Image 1 (cartoon, one colour):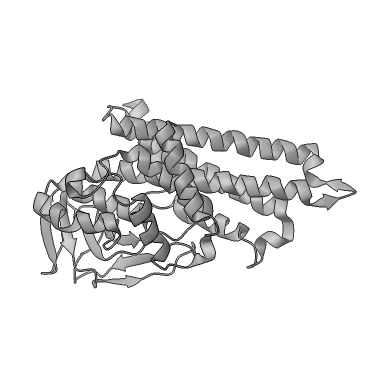
Image 2 (tube, one colour):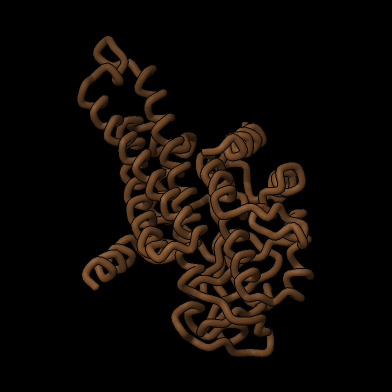
Length: 327
C-alpha cells in the first residue's frame, strides 16, 4: 500500500463509520462517496471528470465497502464503467461518464443476464460487443444476499438468453456501442469481487476475535481456549493470503501481464473459499446469536455464499487454472 492508498482507505472508512448492511439501498451515502471522495470516478480518465487512477485504487474502496457490507453500487458501477471505456466509444463516454463521476448516473453491466446493484443506465456484453440497453427491460430478483440488489434482464425485450455466453441481443431497445473483451471484463470482475470478499472476511474475523475476548464460559473468555485460538489463527492466515492473491492479480491486470487472467482466476477461487470459511467460523464462535436477525453474522454468511457464485463459481475458475497449468 502506498501513502495515497492509505489516505484513500482512511477517508472511505471514516465516511462509512456507522454505516452497515442495515443502512438500506438509499443513494445518500453513495452520492457523498462520489462527490466528497470521488470513488465512482477513480478509474475514469480526467478528460471525463475522473481521477485517472487504476484498478488498484478502486480495490481499496471495494475492500472497505465489503467490510461493512454497505449497499453501495461500487462493484456493478465499476464494471459498467470499465465496459464503456473498453468499448472505445468516446461519444458515449463523454455523455455518460461525467455524471457517473458525480454520482448522478450509475452504469450497470449485465452478466449472464443478471445485473447487480442499482443503476440508472445499463450496458450488456454479447458476442464481443457492448450494447446500451433500456434500463426498464429488467425485473428485480430475490437473492440470498440481503445487502445487494439483483435484477434480471427480460429476454425478448432487450436480451435473448445469456449476456456473456454468445447469445445475440434482440429488440430495438439495445444499441451497439462498440467492441469489448468479455474475457478481460470477467477478469476485472473477479478481482474487484475478490477485494470485496477480502474486506468482508477481514471484518468478520475482527468481530469474531472481539467476541471471543468478551464471551465468558467456564470462568474465562472463550478466546483463551487453544482450540479457538488455532481456528482464528487459521482464519487470519487465509485472509492475508486472500489479500495477497487479490492484489497480485490486480497488479497483473494493470500491467497487462500475460499471466493476468490466470491470477484473476486464482483470486476468485481463493477469496471465495476464504470468505466462506471465515464467515462459517464467525457463526460457529458466536453460537446461537449468530443466526438471529439482530446480529450481522448471518449477513456475512449470506454474502459469502452468494458472492462465491458471482461471475462463475469457484469450481469453474479452478477448471480455468487447471487448463492453464496443463496447456
